[in-house]
Length: 83
Image (tube, rainbow, N blue to C red; front, side):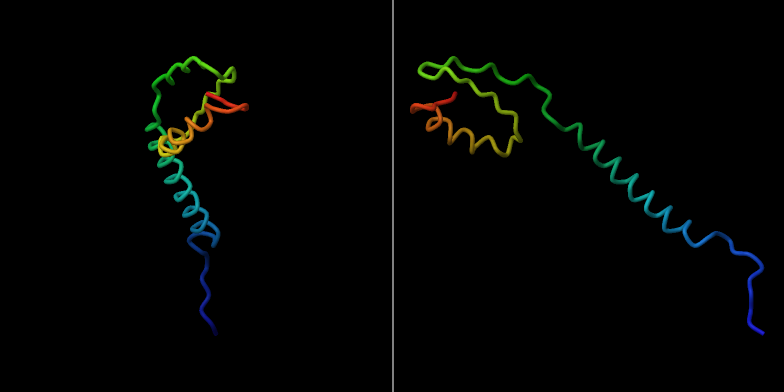
């Protein structure tokens, strides 16, 4: 005769479900903790447009700021200019 257990300690789905819940909790806590590092300062006031009537406010990551600074002079001139 084979050995049979009279009862199992826990169903098979309990351990994977608990592991998935633990991973989800760690991810949620990490996102919540590191999400507070955002810059909460008020954005700078738009500069008055000399030749352009279209003023654009851009909200983006600080890592993209050098790109916008480099494109600013080219976007501020011409027929379809923005500032």
